[in-house]
Image (cartoon, rainbow, N blue to C red; front, top):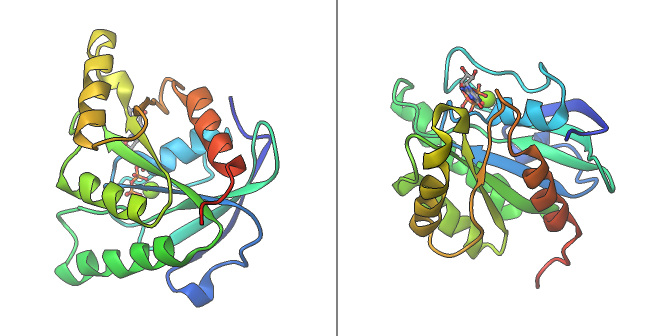
Length: 201
Ligand code: GTP
Ligand code: MG
């Protein structure tokens, strides 16, 4: 299942560079190299839309995409910079937090954050802390296990159950593969639900 149309809008680091808040936004967060850009491309059905990187950790900007979902009104996807890449400088690593938290905490049109977790690494402190912090803002988290093609079918459910426990309460993670195109229907379903849900508060 893929978007009816998808287009790149812009990139920004600071709020004054953000595009106007035109409609609901869905952000994609996760460790560097977890597969964010690949997942966005898979949902969009456009292979080169969000760039996939050979040099991980190079996406230090937020990237916006205009998306016409399989069903329903237009939305925007926001590809957030990845965290936890060891080979970047300390300054660069420390710039991640204000960049991403500034967006997450202040963007009124943000409807959900898709939190990507590499199925082979599982949930670690960074993912757990980020999920809890986003939930505290009153924004729903949609957990996704990426690169699920790398794990035998029989191990997928136990790994998803474990990830769910590690994240505390909340929905079961969606098993996703950009390579084998698995999980996009389930993820589109969760996104549609988040977009149409009444905003709390
Ligand atoms: P940064 O922007 O650098 O933080 O990375 P990213 O999270 O956007 O990851 P990206 O989509 O660039 O993918 C990183 C690497 O993982 C690439 O080599 C991809 O080809 C690979 N990859 C992404 N998704 C999948 C998948 O579903 N299956 C497999 N086997 N590999 C994948
Ligand atoms: Mg990327």
